[in-house]
Amino acid sequence: MSMLIIADDLSGAADCAIGFASVGHRTVVTLDANDDPDADVIAADTDTRRLTPAEAGRRAAAAWQALRAPGRRLYKKIDSTLRGNWPAEVAALQPLAGLAIVAPAFPATGRTVRGARVFVHGKPLESTDTWKLENAGRQADVQAMLAEAGLSTARLDVTALREGRDTLAAQIATAAKSGVQALIVDAETTEDLRAIAQVTACADGALFWVGSGGLAREMAGLPDLFEANTRRERTAYANPASHHAPVLIVVGSLSATSERQCAVLRERAHMQELTIPPAVLRRRESHAEWPAWQARIAATLGANRDLLLRIGRDDAFDAAEGVTLSSALAALVKPHFAALGGLVATGGETARAMLSAVGVSGLELLAEIEAGVAVGRPLGAGLEQHLRIVTKAGAFGTDQALLTAWLHFREGAEAGAVPRNSI
Image (cartoon, rainbow, N blue to C red; front, side, top):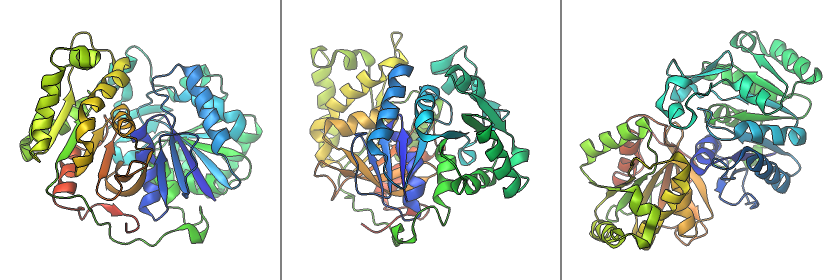
């Protein structure tokens, strides 16, 4: 058996798939949803976060039709804070793949689900800055969002998860027979997610999983999910990045989480920080200050000094222009990419823009720095031998996440990192 993860952005694809790499399965994140690499687990970034719902649905369905294969199971990765067009994507995949088991919770990062509503560290998702930035005035109700996309739904609360495997399996079978298209799963602990993973992995009938990295890591931990001979031997992960080459940390996210992470990094690492005004990035080479910003970046990286590079914010800022701003930022960095010893990219759009600019077609995932923060080896651009890349969703991770990623390169692989097979 193999697994296909369909994600709507690059950092999400990596944080969902890293659980499989961590237990020894060859896991590749691809930027091309038609690419079928030799891997046990393929995480395809369809780059649909900013598309219309209809186009996002078509692209997700096309990815499954292009990459489905005998024995391959489907996992639709969604953001644990419900961003993007995931209801339309699930609706497009459901006729092709069967009953959708919808479990967005990721308790290890503080995201839980009760009554089909998402909570972040115990607070309703609607009260968070992450939600307000892109979804002000909307309710974060999983059941309502799926119903709006045209799916018939039912719910499994935590009591059902904790009544035992036979009872849980019977409830899932009953829902499937009744014509339910999406079964929404409440979960407050990793044990809750483990229960749904164990039962659904061996359930009869067509189904696919819809969730964040939380459910995915419980799926990865199941001993019988893959054939025994697909698991590689786990040995220590050796970080080949040169301690003398600069580390670039690029932050495209404007979330409060990213701001705290940058503050910790500034305080502890004392590295140079540059914040590029959006006006410069919108006009690129036609802006009078573009050459000056190029020179500042070149001076820092050319002197082998580490750099924190950020996208600024102004009154004209619109979250929908993330791709434009990230692509311009990547253009500024591109001339120095080959000289980097390590790259940390925060925000899926930012990570994709950086990798696309230099011809990277994907990442082979190698290790996990903290929950959902993945280290990978670039594929397709001749950078595999020396460069390692860390990806992280913008509103994700502890306040120390960027500092820990930087220390990963400066001090070698941390003792807390979860290794895959040796490289």
